[in-house]
Length: 282
Image 1 (cartoon, rainbow, N blue to C red):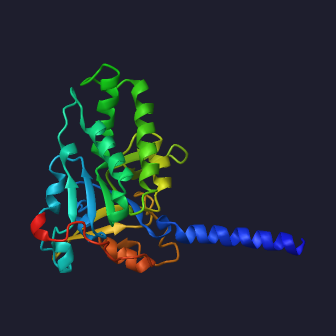
Image 2: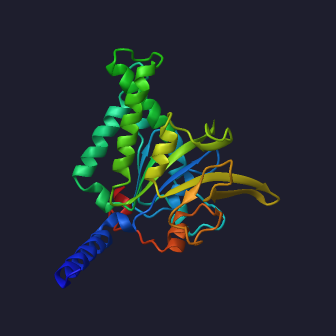
Image 3: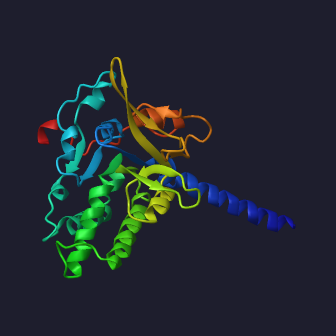
């Protein structure tokens, strides 16, 4: 190799290194957090970097983010609902006259164009389950079968919309969290049962590949009450994974505190500047 060739290769390596370091996504956090009802999935959004934007699809699901929540052991900042912005227009849907998926798609891309996601600390979708239903309602409406039962040909368009959005979501310049529910399935290769994210067909395999972190929200009844925790590594039955904690930075079970997880893996924990300067304006 000549000296000029070596210098050219070195320059290319430095360029790649700088591109990665300058990419805001290299310092951001994205995760799928799934679990059963009552496992604290929505509540833990209070522990994320603020400002927080939640696109809420589950009817009434955003109520756990309202007001003061006095959880034992939480710092005061988590207990407050300050700088948590919830778009709840998607919580109400009529399958025979669907509007939620179209409205959400328009609002998401409008906010992206205006640079809104550059200014927030965390973007969350709650939940994947209901969002997928709303997308299916929209697809059936376009096919002239609103309010009916999905046909076989409806599932592929739904999967395409979901996967395309997931790819776009993890490219945002902020932390991103996808909340979902759990679903039991069988591994076709081994015949073993597993519990993972409730999502359509082969997206059970493809969508988790797009996210760095896959956590299973779980509870455990103790003598002092219900203990909430996040499983960060697969136990065989429950699917979970951590790329950020690959060196042992995260325990198998972590407390449901996103800022604490960010701190342990060396990612920024600071909130971004407030969107509204005076709380009286909210």
